[in-house]
Every structure is written in structure tokens, then in C-alpha cells.
Length: 115
Length: 110
Image 1 (tube, one colour):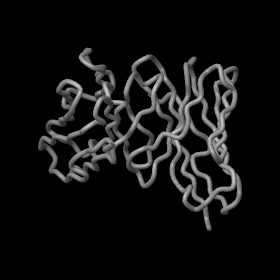
Image 2: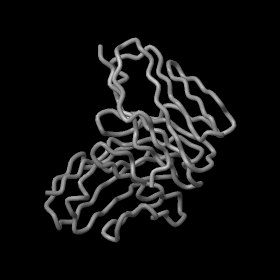
Image 3: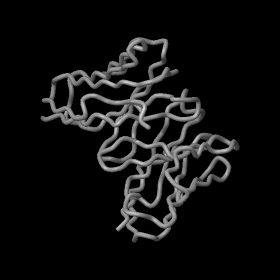
Image 4: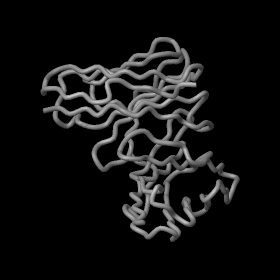
């Protein structure tokens, strides 16, 4: 079946604009994660959705960042009033259960460039 | 904050040689996973080792885990140019998130 997909693959925006990134997880996966990866750095956890439970937003760096997920399907990550430091690759992953027991399947990422 | 830290940060070897990467972590874990990333894009899961396991194999990959030293190693034997990638370890800091290290960039020269 299809893997995790993300769109757009690349996004260039001007400082101050809002952007919306989309993630389509693997069908049937209840868990969905967003990560940020700056150039040459490791992955930085942003947010975790598990089924209908309240999401773990502990990794969101500021209130300009928010994410939603509709049921167990698509998720969108929104960054408001983008800043140059938001430039990074944003990766989405899904798994069939919790992160401590299951493999995460990653999408190809969205490369965000804020000018 | 990052849980795992990989060592070395970068590694260059010739095809056919073995590559060893190490990961250290700070708190107790249930399991540790290794992932591979090509060209700064999506990660691919390689192997998961549980806290009660000491060694695990998958093809040319061998992973060890020493919970007393809070460290793990990933060995790639008989490396190939196609193994060129970044390798990350990830640990379960709690029940709801994985914490990834900063990665080791492996370059295998033909």
C-alpha cells in the first residue's frame, strides 16, 4: 500500500506569511508525528497524535506553530507569521501504535525556506 | 532536548570496510531504534532492539545494546557505496515520543 505522503515537497515563502503543511499517514495508523530537522541537525520532535486522545504538543517551539488531525487521517501543520529560523525540513511519520513499541514510517518531508 | 547522541558525527570509509557508529543516551529506555536517512529526507527504520536484548542482527547490520553504559552501537559490515547516508538512533523517552540523536553521516567511497 501507499506510504506516508507529504505536500508540498518544497515551499518557499516570505517572512511573515503563514504556511500550511500536509501529511497523509498510512491508512489504519493511529499514531502520527511531526518533526523538524534543521540543516545538518537531528530530528526535533514537534507534536504527536494518537487516535482520539489529546495530542502531545510539548515539542511545539512557539504559539506560532499548531497542528490538527482529522480522526485518524490527514494532519496539517500550520506555521503563522513565519520567520527565517523556521526554515527546515518538516517530517511526518505514522505508526500503527505507540512510538515506544512500533516502527515509525516517515514521509519524504517538506522543505520550507523562509526568505 | 536530544536524548541520543551519536558518535562519530561523520565517518568516511572505503567500500568493503566495516562502519561502526555509537549512540549514547541518558535515561532508562524500553527500546532503542536505528534509522537511516538519505539526502536529508524521510527516514527508514533499520532495526529495533529491546532493553532486555544485548545484540540483534539484520542482514549486514549488527546492533548491540549495553543498558549499564546507556549505549548502543550499529555495525555495518562489508559496506557499499549505497550505504552512504545519515544514521540516527532513537530512544523512547516516555510512552509517547521517540527522541532522535543528532546522527552520524557515513560516506562510503567506491
